[in-house]
Image (cartoon, rainbow, N blue to C red; front, side, top):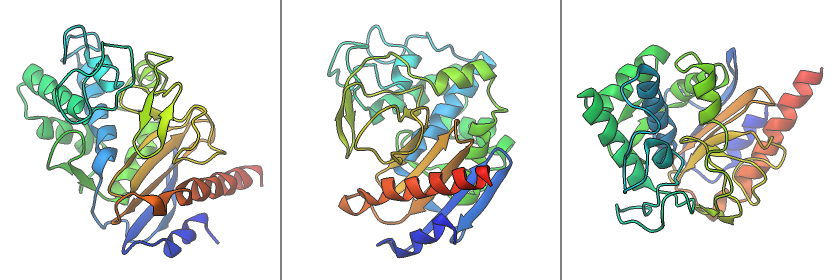
Length: 274
């Protein structure tokens, strides 16, 4: 029995899931082609597109963007000081980890201005096309407006395990803690001291409670969405997991997600030892 089979008992109408390694999807549950709203899992795709723009030299991580003193790197790492859902400044730059969807809208506008390509088109050309993400599109705000399916996000997770779009150095920086020591809130999971984040990717570190499993390594990175979705990659485990549902995140998901992810980690670990 696969650990993914437990998703059948979740209190959702529809769900799809996959476990992936660097070789691609190794287990799947549900319809891999069913399209779901991603909510904040969108930020992973948007961050990847911004990093592709950095790789291509269209922008630099140290380029000014957002409030005075902030850069593209600050915006990606939720360290710009911008509020959650507005462009009001809630704190000085690099003094707190303020989770900001508005900051991702600024990022999209910054790349759009630098490349003279609509950001949704840039995401499609720079990330979706080379990875073969045929059902993924940014149809709304850059912080939460994408939709996709497990087939596509499984390919994206595979890319995050064995990057081809980004240089090793940039990928490592993006998935490592940036502006270390900043405290802040993970939506739905409370305040963390520190609240570690990379360049668009949340870093698990030692956070508790958390949506990933207690057995996931501290180096695990990814994101969850308020639409009932998540994607994580554990570089120590050498695997990742994607789950998409159509029920908004809420009390039903805690501690269900964490327990489920512990089961996934245990299954992968046991397979590696056999």
